[in-house]
Image 1 (cartoon, rainbow, N blue to C red):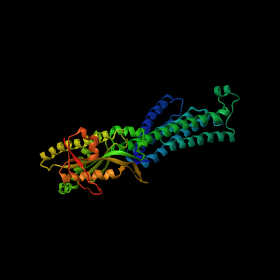
Image 2 (tube, one colour):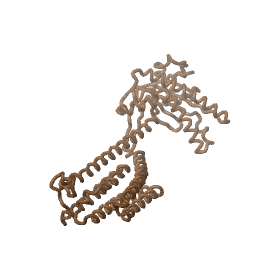
Image 3 (cartoon, rainbow, N blue to C red):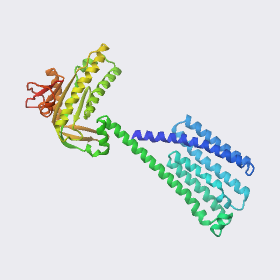
Image 4 (cartoon, rainbow, N blue to C red):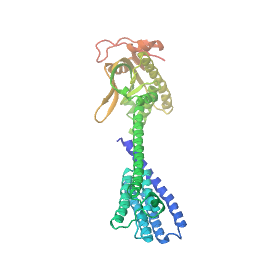
Amino acid sequence: MDDSVRKVLENEEVIGAYVSNAFRYLLLLFFAAQLALNWKSGDALINGIAFAIFTAVTIGHSYVIRTCTQWAIKGFSYLALVADFFVITSLLMYYTLHENSFDLGFAIKNPIMNFLLFPLAFSLIQFRLRYVVLSVILFYLVYFGIFSYALIYDKMVFAKDWGDYVMGPNVLVTDALFGRPMVYLILAFFFSFGILRTLIMIRRIGEGEAQRSLLSRYFSPGMVEEMMTNPNVLEGRRQTATILFTDIRNFTTLSENMDPIELSKFLSSIRETLTDCVFEFGGTLDKYIGDAVMATFGTPYPSADPASDAIRALQSGQRMLEKLGEFNKVRESNGLEPVRIGIGIHTGEVFSGNIETSKSSEFTVIGDAVNTASRIESLTKNFGKELLVSEETWKLAGANFIGETLPPIQVKGREKLVTVVAVGA
């Protein structure tokens, strides 16, 4: 289970404990009203003792929730559940023996038996299947314990028909054995099913949000939505894509006087600015490499027309230079050295898809086109230009931009000379 999902579930359990505790106080009001209404017909002392025990457990539950660890909260919740069964069962047996010690049918038909539904309800509120199971076990121990004792010692009178059962004090054996116990079991099943469905829903939502959060670091918001509905798009394929590399000029000199915190803030600010420019034009953030950024256009969805990817890549590069100009105005106003970057863009065939290990997964592109884009970015230093594109990219997108074709140059890893174009505003 994902850590974020586990934290959500643990948080929901704590919230459930708070809510169930609030409901216990509502039950206190209900029991107080019962005491007042049955002051003359019931045993005030016994009712008062039961009320006091329930109150003590409720207050203790409040204290544990607010001051103790999660394990202590879970442990006390079990204790509270057992205590509730003890109080209700004690009341039930007291009034049964007090009214008629020879007929335990009074206990089976006593309305107090319905109070045993309250612990089951608390289990639902706290989203704990184990509480439901424990409630069912305790209920059956109490119910069939009374029923078995009555059978063994002949302490119950059985009704002959349904009318005798409903209108008189006697017990109908079929209802006593199957009807009442099955009602509790069916309710427990519904509660368990509701809890299980809720937990599954929370887990799915949590995992979905975790995946959405991860994807949003690398893809534009619109693309994230598409990928959430069609995750198969991340499967590996060969395709044509446009790759953009950008790197900070003289980064070592620029950062050598920065302390670690200042350097971290600086890099975060630059990365966020450049990444926003990638996402603005529907690009994909492939990775950060130190002070460099690698982005792709046309992944993970291959475009029908590669020219559109090339155009968006050039637009993104120009927007980066525009945003960097605004960034530098702020730096210069604070007496800081302006930041310069170099941008290289190339279009070619790549392998695009998820590269997975047993512990991690990364969506990336691999191929000679990636290396060529990196080499072109390095050429910005040689030519003293900020934005260079390959001849292949310029053929696709050049009609939409102003550019200057530079003399062919040899780059590492390529036998043929490479022709690049310096793109202007």
